[in-house]
Structures are given as structure tokens and as C-alpha cells.
Length: 553
Image (cartoon, rainbow, N blue to C red):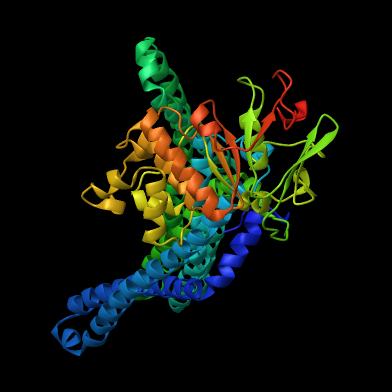
């Protein structure tokens, strides 16, 4: 299936790569589709000839009936019926196998592109829009593989039908071939003019609806408290109406495609019958029925043309994500020092040191963390890592140096083990229990019926807020990184639990030698740091302090 573009694009290159990788399955699917279409044309044509011939023989009398050989046509009909079923199954099996294998490669590539993207681009995508691209847009691309056999099926059907029609009368090929050419030309025109725009609109409307639905679901309690539930529903219904209108236009184009095929098939059959009036009745029936079923078998090509608009729109939307995946290779320097521009003076944070970021709310502490993790754009010259300017680095290398526990702990819908393995996929159970103990969560997890394999719910909903924070902290400690970035790791903990968590963190730092950059307003947690870094907005700091440039806020 063409993507209707001659310009090179990341998604086209990725699709071409997947076509090469899945070429065996695609070839088997194409040959099977051709076999199924040819068998269908021969089956109906032979059936028409057999029934008509049997009727003529019966009308001619007992002598002709006795001489009529019905065994060979019957065997051939049964063989063709079985062959058509087998070929069709093979086409579906190998075509869908190729599509599923390809999509399994495409989605990780897209996710990698999104994760490696500069913050200014990747963070512009809302969660609903990102989900739409990674799920629905990629699903639309499966037609590139599933319907790759459609041209082969159409050609095989036309070739088989042409051979049988020529047996009756070669001139009868004219209306059949004209109808096929008209079917292809009109189908392509409908695909371009009627399907492409509504297909693109449906994808965009789906993204907008998912985005708003997710936003309203997250704020459902607030909407109820402020009496805004009805307004939110009205907004969602407006977006749903936009999606429905786009889908209706898609269905209108599909209906046009559906009406085109039988109309042209009827004209072709009529033309073939008229031109075969002087041919034997059995051959005329063979030619007419073959023409009809061949054009019907070519309907898969119309379906591919109908879906071409959605495929084109999806490929264009996904190009933006794949364009972000071009990563620059950077040497892995471990451990690496951090250099900050402090109003013209440069301050270095050496590996293994423990620093406290202090300052009033809004002065840029969390923003600094986000900059180090390449989640926020940084002006050139303001942050360096390992002697390199952060603004010129590929995001993958700096991120490999840090293990981050954000203030807003985020857990995935899975087990305790699943959440811990985000920090270190290859960690063994002993390491998991060790970090859980340091986060003061080991007894809680051990008391659960399934231990590490206990389901924590969607976003950790089955855990309390403090338990979610400590599980996030344990995941951070499990990751083998040069630096820990901890944002309020003991917030909302009681004094006794906080003291034990702080002791666990101190033991962990002494054992691993990791550096620490800490944001905390709790005196117990602040005691972990040996140095303090004061951001703008504070009173003059002690001798060991410095101030970060406003560019980092």
C-alpha cells in the first residue's frame, strides 16, 4: 500500500525495513492471496459451466445424460473449494503474522524516539496524544502489511477470469477488463478525495477526546466538588460529536466503495453475457460468473485504497516521533562531575558528594532536577556534565548517570516487582529486598500474600501515599547510577519512619559511594547532605554555598 509520498521519511524507512524483515511471511501471504482469488474465480466459473451443462444434458434426453461426465467436474469443484479455503487461511495467517511482528518492532522504536526527544518537543505531546500515536496510529499502519497482498489477489483473479472468459469468446474480455480498470481508477479517486481527509480528522479527534477524557478523569473529585461535571460531560460530548462526524465521512467513503464494486460487476457481467450470446450456454455461464467473482475478489484492492487515507495520516503523525529517535553517540563516562554556572562563576559537584538544594518555593530546585534529566531545555553554558555542555548532549547519556525519586511518586499498574524493575530490570530478589528494607517497606511487602508479586493497583492505588513514596524511593536506590536525585523523599512520613528511612539512605550512600543531590524541607533528611547549594531568592548562604544562575529557574 502506498503512503502517497515520494519524500523520504522516518516512518517510510522503518516500514521498508520491516517489509524486508517480514518478506518471507509477506511473500507467502501474497502467493496465498493469489491462489485464493484464482481458486475462487475458477470455482464459480466451473460451477456455472457444470450446472448449465447438466441442465442442457438433462433437457437433451436420457442418452445425453448417460454420456455426461459429472465426476471430473465435481472433483474439480471440491478441490477448488478446499484450495480456496486453505489459501485464504494461509493468507490471513501469514499476513497478520507479518503485521504483528512489524508492529512489535515499530512501537518500541517510536517510544524510544519519544523518550530521547528534546524536552521542548517531547513534552508538547499530552499523554492522550502520545497514547493515540503509539496505539491507534501504529494500528493504522498494520494495513500496510495486511493488505499488501491485495494487488496480487486482484491480478490473480483477473488473470484466471480472463483465461476462462476467453474460452467462451475473446471479445468478451473487453467489458470485463474495462470494468476492472474503472474499478481501480474510481477506487483510487475515492480514496484520495473522500477517505484521506476524514481519516486524518478521525485520528486527530480521537487524540483530543482521549486527552480530555484522561484529564477530566484525573480531576473527577474536583469536578464534582465545584459542580462542573455537567460542563465536562458537555465538552466531551462536543469532542465525541467531532469524532463521530469524521467517522461518518469515513463510512460514507466506504459506502461509496461498497456500491462501486457491485455496480461495475453488474455492468461487466451484462456485457460479457451480451457478447457471449452465440457461445454455448455452459461457456456463457462460465464467462459471466467468472467475471462477477473476479471483480468481487478485486474488492480487497478497493478496501486498501479506502484505508489509504488513515495510513497516510498516521504515517505523517508518526514521522514526527521517529524523527526524534536519531540519537548521538556519547561516551559513557562514570562517574561524572556536574558543573553549574553560578552568575558567572562555575561550581562543581564532584562524584560522591552530598548536596542539599535550598531556596524558597519556586526558585528553581525541581527545575534543576528536570534540566539534569533533560526534561527541560537548558541554555548553552549553564550546566555541564563530565566536561560536556548539557545542552549539546543526547538525553540518553545524562539520564544514565542519575536515579531520580520525584516528589510526585509515579507507579505503574503492576506488581511490586514490576515497579522495582523499572529501576533495574536485571536486579535479583536479594537486591530488591535490600532496597525495600532501606525504604522501610520490606515488612509491609513481606506480610502481603504474594510478596513482591502483589498487585499494587493502577498507579499504586492499593498503597497509601507514604507507601507509594517509599516504593518509588526503593526503585531509585535499586538503579545503578552515579547520582541520586531525591525530591522530598521523607515528606508526609511520621518522625519515627522518617528517621529509619534517613538511616537507610545514609547506609546506602556509604555502601555505594553514590553522589546525592537532595531537595527537602525536613531537618532529618537535610542532615544527609554535607554541602548546601542556595538558589536565587535566598539570603546570603554560608561559605560553602553558591547561587545558581537565573537561567536554570
